[in-house]
Image (cartoon, rainbow, N blue to C red; front, side, top):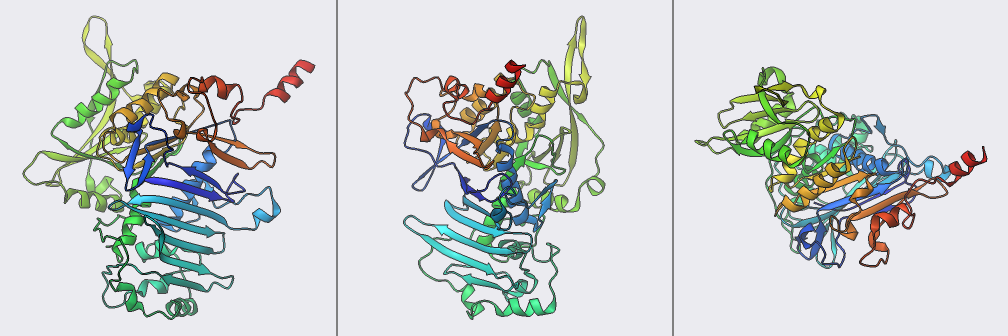
Length: 501
């Protein structure tokens, strides 16, 4: 789960902003809260703001950090590392990112890094304990590219017994330590022999054997996780679960960027895929009479990317033998679904809509391109909704512009269905929106509502409705549109210009 996210000096964020999923003291909508140790974590965060206020930039900040952690690349999907450029001092400073997350067995971590195009300046990982934080590692790289790594007192499982730190020789100044540990040989970062030597020596004189000692005073549990398709078997188990959170648990959905690979939708029995999809679609009034899953030609060796094929093989190992359970995968954008059983038998389907005709008992199947933008947008979100409604997901879905092409009632229903049906799962849903119909205390808690706007220096600021003292019976939508909380378009200058003419 996401606890907090901080970003500074990235795109439109000059100063540090904090987005928090920590619940306030209110007992309203108590079913909207996950309880983790002594913390109360929200299931949902909804961010409102005018056009160009920075809503999408906040999601891009999360996206950049995720991509840099999992792939070591500064660029992805037309997004690159860009500091706040409207201030000369900020333009030459590194960008900073920090996540507080829950993963493993109720373990909480704080992960931070600052980076520019030349190097990672600083990187730290701490475990958040009840009354303190425990350092796991700290890393600094100076202007000459010399990197120091300090290792804290932790329990560690290392799978390579011959040379526990041979990956250090491939660890560059412009690469994260967390990435190097988990993607050895896959990041594409090349360093020369001199740099290899410097980094091999740069462990602050600490004997590498201490890194695998079992030391007291830690609550870190060594949780075995399946290897990601992007990396080999984990060298250091507890670092793997943190990397895995960024690689698998965190899922970002932009309106115009469609992931090319699938997302696991869980396990089903027999023909339950069709039933489960129908249950979801029936919740929303889409103006269609039904749908059908039409089998399509599929060859695993030909049609599956290599890394995703390996991931599916890992999933197949978890399917019980001698059952009719199948693992299900969906793809955004083209509404294709893939199922596989314990014997590696694959079936692939395309989702089509059905429309009845007068005096004809056979409905007409239509390709999704024949449907409205709103219907296609909602169906594009079905893989995410499938996971969120399953009651078994632990994903953090971050959706930019949830209301794109959707009627306000549909947008409201998406959130309402998630909040009422997510059960005991540890799913979270974070969205940006312009839809003021969601500003409803019957739907959301105050601490689930966030606003974003730009100050006079064109720097985006972020704040929660929880910061305002409001009467219990206040019409929050009317208050927002009246400008009480800011984060709305400034139309007065335009109005004055038009009336003057």
